[in-house]
Image 1 (cartoon, one colour):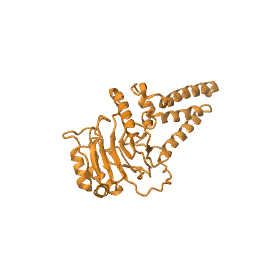
Image 2 (cartoon, rainbow, N blue to C red; image 1 turned 90 degrees about the vertical axis):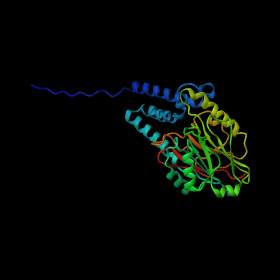
Image 3 (cartoon, rainbow, N blue to C red; image 1 turned 60 degrees about the vertical axis):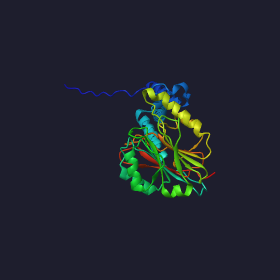
Image 4 (cartoon, helix red, strand yellow; image 1 turned 45 degrees about the vertical axis):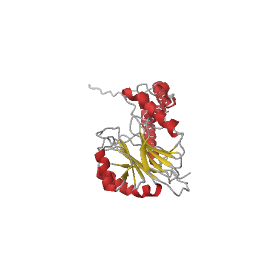
Length: 315
């Protein structure tokens, strides 16, 4: 006589769920605590910069850890809700209550070693009509092409024969140059790369500075920390300043929080700008000693995300 028997695996005990919850929360808390670690000496340690930049993942992990007290399904639901919040909140426009009447629009783009499509850069400039433009990781050919297509005037030049990440170039619209008496020069000694400056003496003696900090990779971690320290110390001493570019840092990095300037996101949180295919963190920023009137991002084929923001009013 044949007999059929059915078996079911027992559900995980509350004890197992509790242990998983504790382990998950310990990892998440340690991970999130990294954003509070002092820049010296931890900025030069392996993986610290990466932990800080991805601290939002620890928040999702913590939500999953709390949910697992009930069930694996509840853990997945909590993690999904946390992830959804991380993805949506940075894209919600922030309200603007400013009464400023004389803004300057700034446009910053990392061209990824000159690989951006020049025609699309020119089209974005035509659409957004910025007053000041910074092109990072650019080259002489790209600068010339963008200037020819837009009529914008280069205020600085890339290093001759250099097509790598060192080059940062400033351009301005002809109308802005005429209106403000804008002229360009280089700020020396702040980072490894070029640091172009546009001076606008007829616009409250405003300074617009393009920034490219070293990436915190391998042996460059100490240099990255020094770049941010130099930039923040210099910027905090200025009165009418806009910094724009690729800081290779997020708000989670202690050295980035040393800047005493307003960060122009234009949204409730930092809209991600890196990597280009599916951005998850924001490395590109525009900040000012004045008042931000808004901001946004725009995708350019072949590069990172473009970030544009109105800069401060005269003060």
